[in-house]
Length: 305
Image (tube, rainbow, N blue to C red; front, top):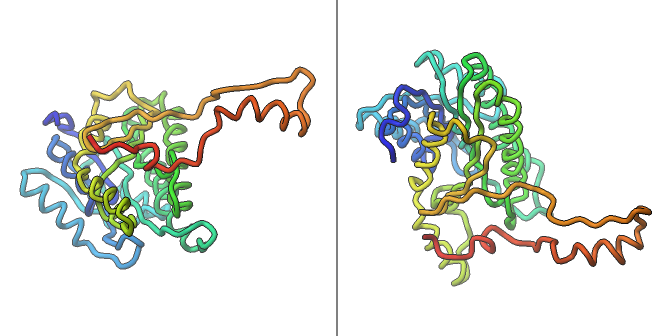
């Protein structure tokens, strides 16, 4: 990491009480930033609430000579989201970057998913990213600068079993980030996404029943949360002023730029289409370009480097 890349900056990291969020907060502080540690201290599935995880993150930052403050407001509420931004402005008088990382899981097969399981995950991930980003946008627009880094997932970019709520929210965040990048480019504001691979509370719930699943989990454990932080620090810094609207993935020592949807093949008929001609002409011509029902693990099928 380039020490000092964030000197003089103020960064908000949501979900910074543990896992990847804590790693982001520590890396930002080590690079010179003052950090707003946002965390409500709930369990992986959203129960409970304690300030102790955020306290632990702040204690580490201060032990290493850094500076930070704790925010325990929830991202999943419009007014609370604004209070997170206010915490930065009231404490440090400025805000330069926001890392939207807070998350919760309620994994269940789609045909068994309840309204509550859907709503909670969408509220924290997608709505939470919007609420915090929307509040920060007012600050960024006035000062004609600012950077967003949003946490997405290959569960949304590619697919996974039992995560319809999480996948939909994460893919929505990727689209939201692109919209922010487009709408706020004129104000010098950047917005990018990172799909992190890391062993944390969020991935510790991955099933490990079969020998194949157990082997996969052991590989995941090699990917510690801190492996994602160099890219995040860079994207929040002035060094990345020409990088916006991108989706990256980090897998141990690998950094990927992910594809965004573009046409890959087309067919046409000057007389137009009928259901029969679609069946007889369009689908046979397009079939070789159709995507299989891949999961994230099918695409990232090699051992972490």
